[in-house]
Structure formats: structure tokens, C-alpha cells
Image (cartoon, rainbow, N blue to C red; front, side, top):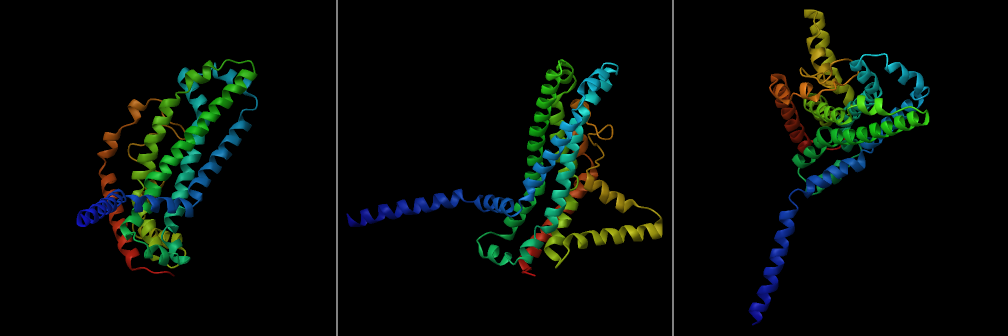
Length: 311
């Protein structure tokens, strides 16, 4: 009887120990991502600040709406849609530019910062692998920032739409022109597509290169990351009188894809059926070459972190 009573609690304890172990397979990655958000407040502060600045500029532009809306009636219907959507497109462009800047500075400091303040000694003492740590850091530019930018942009444009409607109603005008000419759902669908293609997958090799240099350099990581690019571009210009490498890196960074969703500078196309072309984007050889290069940079960064210590 004693043997049975002792065996039952032991088997119960083993089953309870196995269950948390099975459930905690992804918890190190989850807490590593949360750590990045705790330590890098600019990831969400900068987009919120940019959205606030865009809303302030929109409020200033709302002065004198009667003249502006009245002038829309004289335009062609296609140009009316562009004129109504222009402030929303500019605000979305500000958010995307902010996302690029935040991503560049984050990637350049992701590994360099923990080596500079010597916190790498503490983080390496935890049961979290270097691969998990690098995947958490890579998730910021490839998952967290695009989704965060998309959510903030939607909220910002919705507030802009409400403000625009309120000003028109207060001026005794109809909001029919605003709501009929502005295709909100299509605009948001195009924004989501553009964020994850042009500003996430397409510049992946640039972001992973910054992560790699961040784990290697002992100071001024962003400068060391830019130096080889400047040297190669300068040598190419001196010898061949061309700028192919500089254009290649620049178009990758700003998201100038072969199947870009833009049809005119500063404006989104209003027909997603003709401009959201994932098939054309995914069939681009440059995309897959860039992803292979990005994966090699990321693998090198994982191996580098394994042997790098504090500065």
C-alpha cells in the first residue's frame, strides 16, 4: 500500500513536470521579443510621435476646407479621388519613412548595444540559445514593426477621416464627396501589402547586414555598416563610371520593388486588384536572391554572437 501511495504522487509530479516543458517550447522566444520591446522603447514611441505630427499637420491643413472641397467639383472624377486621398497617402508615407528609420537604427544597435553595456553577460547566462535571441531580434524589423506601423496608420487615418467629416459638417457641407471618393478599405489593404513586400521582404538583406555588423563592430556600428557600401560604390564609380551597386542598395532600403504598388509619386493606386500582385512579386528573382543573402547574414550573426563578448 505504501508503494502504491508513493508511486501515485511521483507519477503525478512527473506528468506535471512534462506538461510545462512541452508548453514552454516557444516561451523563450516570446520573452525574448518582449525583452526587445522593453529595452527599445523607440520601436513604438517613434511611430506614435510621427502619427501625432502627421495629425497636427492635417489639422492645420483643414483650415479653409470650403475652398478646397468646392474646387474638387471642377476636377475629373479620377482626379477627385486622388485629391481627396492625397493627405491620407502623405500621412501613410510619413509612417513608412519612420518605420525605415526605426528599423535601420534598431538593427545597427541590436547586438552592439548589449555588448556595449555588458548586459550580454547576463543574457548569455540564461537558458536561451543564440538562435532564439537572434530570431527575436529579427522579428522586430520583419514582424513587429510592420504590424505596429500598420495598426498606428489605420488609427491615424481613421481619426483624420473623423476630423475631416466633422469639419465639413460644421461648415455646412456634405461629407458625401469624402466618403465616396476615399476608398478606405482598399487603401488599408494596399498599405498592408506594401509594408510586408516593399518594406519587409525586399530590404531584408540590408536589415540582416546591419544585424551582422552590429554583432561585430566595437564602436559606431552604423558607420561600419555603411563604410563597405560607400567604398564599393566609390570604386565602381571611379573605374566603370557606373552606380549600379549604390542604386541596388538604395532601392532595397527604400522599398523600390519591381512590382511596387505606387503609380505616382506620393499616392497609392485606388484599385488593389490591379496593383496587389503577389504572384509577380514572389516570382522576382531578386527577391529570392536577397532572401538567401539575408539568411546567410543572419546565420553569420548567430554564430558571431556565440563567440562575441562585451566590448
